[in-house]
Image (cartoon, rainbow, N blue to C red):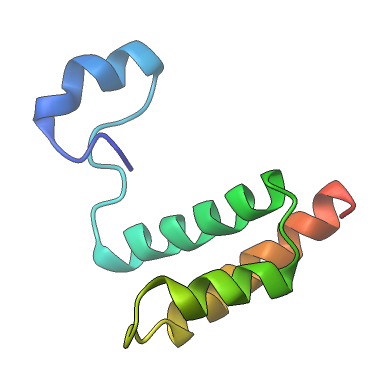
Length: 83
């Protein structure tokens, strides 16, 4: 996600990731949702905690679709790591 274009080519090569691998908005959005889920689990947040963060982070933010995608990844990763 960080190596979005050729400006990051040296860094991407050093860490072994391709430049621009998430080239479409749906790919980037899905990767962000999965990252939200994994970070939540690493911080040992319950699903109620995650919902509260989303609900209170930005007033007026329409977070429903993103939260739904995070839930899919949260459940999958939680089952995989036994949380």
